[in-house]
Image 1 (cartoon, one colour):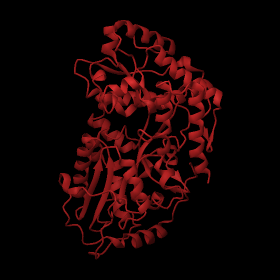
Image 2 (image 1 turned 60 degrees about the horizontal axis):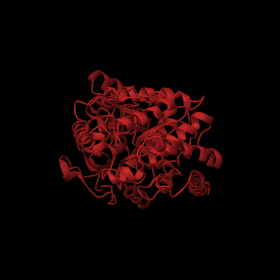
Image 3 (image 1 turned 60 degrees about the vertical axis):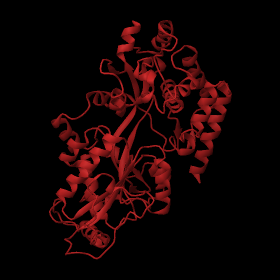
Length: 473
């Protein structure tokens, strides 16, 4: 996945590239995209706006700061997924961008996550994705493996200030000798606990595996429908990998080769079984029977009966917002008795990429830089896409006091603990598609007693190796 940083492009060459590629900007700036649904369009529609050029374009390779006339009038398109808060904040930032760059209009396409990956896969394949796209880290491998579907952002280093981002995070977004996207934030899994429930049960929040098992029994004594943790199938997959990496210290996959044999993965499956058997987590049948689409919307979570989750560090607001105000959500710690290693991974949670088919690459780069680094944008966006990795954005957000304190605490714990490398195919849709993925099949089958630990391990290995075999071709 990683490749060496692309060689710096000479200013004169960059000027020529910018001057040529920006020539598509034209008289489409009169389109209204400032309000609500009027800015939406299908993700599969043509994301480009054509027309005749207006005015003289200044040299794209000049040293002028962004906003000093180094752009042409045009309409850009952008896509992202998320919830209402992210939608509203991003639209506010887009309006601020339009104010800062008169003559550039931005049309937005956005929705919730469900079905979004499939929709964007079609758009990327057809070459009809928006000019600027919020992308998952693994999409670089899935949709841009040869570096041709997303622009190499190194070519726009005079427009996008990538010096604000740590080099190692930029390298995680490089593929086929290109900078496929710029990272927005980093994330990882950690425990979150409803402290109020633990206080009601009369025990401390667990900080070790032994204490977690003991908590299961205490919760069962308190009430048969009370559990210290609740996890779906994908949560269980990630937790199992964290457990095995903590014990054995080896990355899950290296160079498209699974590093764990059937015996070790069977051990991981027994670890998950142990949590169910000791009333630490409800069965998948129990969770499905609750009738909620996600744990944060589950009434048992809202009522405090499910008192813990294993979730992304960015999940603080999502889960705390659904709890009554008299319940206290706190960040947990990693368990040191899983092994001698600090297992688990942090990853680039998402990035901004520019479609290779855009007719407005320079203007799209201006928009990416604004979203990534602009202080006003940082104040508006807060941590809607996680804790910013841009130093400029993080500084502005901290000064404004707009970051969620729990998210900041969780992110700090994740980045200081997790030591393993994430496989870019770990989240491949064949493995993690909702309802149909290998992870769902394996951990659902294990929970429903349709598979024993050995059978579950073998089925997981077959599914992973099938995906990795395709990756090697």
